[in-house]
Length: 161
Length: 389
Image 1 (cartoon, rainbow over the protein chains, first blue to last red):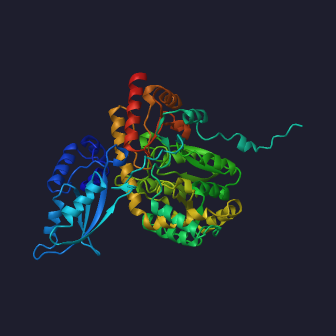
Image 2: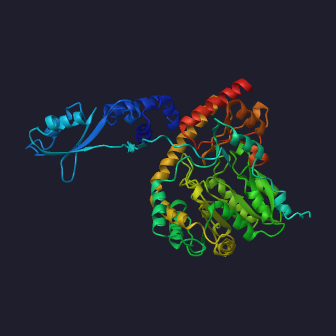
Image 3: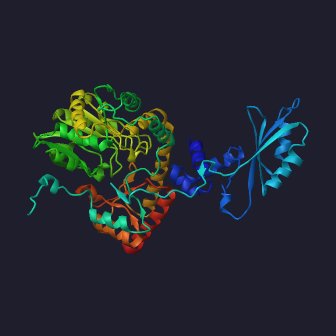
């Protein structure tokens, strides 16, 4: 129960302090620390990320989703080829998919040229990769459950009985 | 030529809800952090809104049956059984209304004759008294006491009951105190009601918002109470649907029948679009409601902890989304406390006496706000108490 509720809170806000978590969930700080340590050890909590809306910064950033078809290998299945792909720093996510292609690869770069270059010269040429299809993200509306637009104003009355 | 006084004296003497002046000041002030609102901060779950959009596209823009869509009443019947073990016939014992408020009004109009007395626990929501008066009845206030965690006690009822007593209003989980009544708490009340042959209007609008190991119990589910209880509930608090104005009443067919007549002539039917959306709410939104409830509970714990750190006395409430701390030790009236807090720190909370004289000495703090908002507001309240009091 504690684990489920901790994850529910942390999934939305990785910065909640142990003090606040302890008060909000009604358990001791020691228990919170123990449970979080445990989950980090078990890799249930795999990381604490910051969700950045890059469109609001001056930095150029493009994201592409790439459908990749591959030839699975004997004994290794898709894992070996996946690891060849996820090793690149440019690759932020790799998923094995059901459907007409095999791997969904998410690649981030500064420019479209940079991403195209990566696909052409690094990804498409790998042994066992038979085809790629690249889709650039034009606009991010919602990511990780968060709306990218400015937060909504509270339109409720000041006082309501 | 002078125009004569056209206003009904009963209406003229009716006080506008709460303390109007204070509310108006708060509403016009800038940069106020408000903890004064009695409605969820969550938006209505998207599947409900999407259903409403779809039904508009489908052209479902007509009147429904007076009592409400049959399909909705059937869903309500199964929901009431699933949640509270209440058994009602969707065709004769359920009426869909414009918010729980309409149901309160209708039931009082349907039952009260001039001079009939209505036992109303206090502090409580502000509409019971005026609705009673408009229906020709006489409100008789029964105090809820802090030493009893603001639960209603049969002893206090015994002191106020007379041969003219007809109705008891049961406002639990309670606004503004957050107090709840367990089955054990309800049993003596049910015995009292049966002994004096009274009828209960049970306003259970906050039923889905109880915390800890205290699922809501409806007094209508107690032995021998179904035939003398009207259960009133609605979609506003549970599903964050305040603006949709949709509620319902479940009770004996003889009462629902008469209420439906008044409803038919004054309202015709509840908004069709809201009714279709509500079907989706009942069918598909248990998980979203549970999620909101867990979030409220975290805020509730947070508030209780902060109030106790600040040295404010507050009994621990297990329902609704309010805490009702005592401010007696600061030597100010609740209105004065709220006014000064508003001017000094720009935090709006509601004076307890807005909910009747028995609420004096308390303020209502709502936790229908994000943890961040609560944090900021509580820091300001702490600064106010430390510097000013």
